[in-house]
Length: 478
Image 1 (spheres, one colour):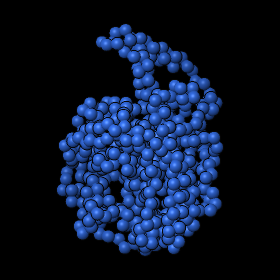
Image 2 (cartoon, one colour):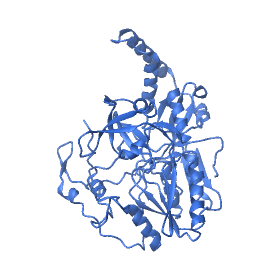
Image 3 (tube, helix red, strand yellow):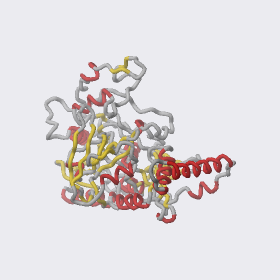
Image 4 (cartoon, one colour):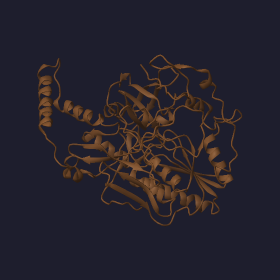
């Protein structure tokens, strides 16, 4: 794998505020070069902070812990910048390192915080959370009967993690259902980032995350598929609900499919500060056709791979528009990690054609809903959880906006058994069979009956139909 900058490891977390990877102090020297500004106001505000802390220590109704208060202040400062900047105390920094090594204890959930509510990005394949039926977009309101409303992501994670083998009960709030409890047992999480199998004359490779093993496991999977079927006709790369991970692994996986050339670039505050990451000559799959499956849970490093293969005309994309996480986080250890670390957004990333997909996501070449219910949700904007749904998300660099409610191009017809079949995979295999999205016979556009019948009222009292230019925000639990 070729990277433009050595001795740096960048993290692109897929919209999760606690599942991270190790990183280096990539932008410390840049900060040191900046021209100092007048500091009087800054010193005054630091003095104010000390005065407030002293007042809380002396007058709050119960004794307080200074360390906890200061850590909360650091966390608040960083999370005010954007959803992905954060302060990691030493314990959280250690958890982050375990996560990116591909082994840790817990339930197997990628989560974030939205307006003080813990929200699921995706369950990790093969973990207690996935087996229990937890879904992307679910809200977690309590752990073992104790509310987590208003907690930071790190504090919510502490509630969920604990002794392996113990039962944990999560209270879930889900669209159009009453709150319910889900019970599961904590395990040592050893997520296998890659699974694969033959689909007739084609290969299927599922990449669940971009931890430190992603490139090596993907390479081994391709080798196995080709060894078992030397006449392999093509490959489906499944990046659905892949929340991202490490940038170097995104470049490494892309390198398996590309014969040299750019994979991604990242651009920081200074317009001159551009880093380019390239594949090396010699693609692992040669010229075999590839289709990539994406959906709204495809984020960050997964979007880098999808965007690179789409821009370089190496693969066509099938599914739904991706999450839109187009920013780079650098993890900066403090005192070698003894004081934890700062996770800071330091750049945006751009696909080879120069697209910044921050907030907007990557649109598929063939839009396909996984289920008939999902098609209705897309039409009604009830399933629009994405980077753009965060109030303080970094703006799109090009000023673009994410596509609003609309009827997806395709959804499973009534005769398709959604419980036994995977419609998006079926259509991806059709694209491989016919040679391209353009040549693949199209199905009738699904009728969005809910979108046609429902009339929603905006917060200002005006009537807005789903699919119109004025979006209606998704409902949130009370």
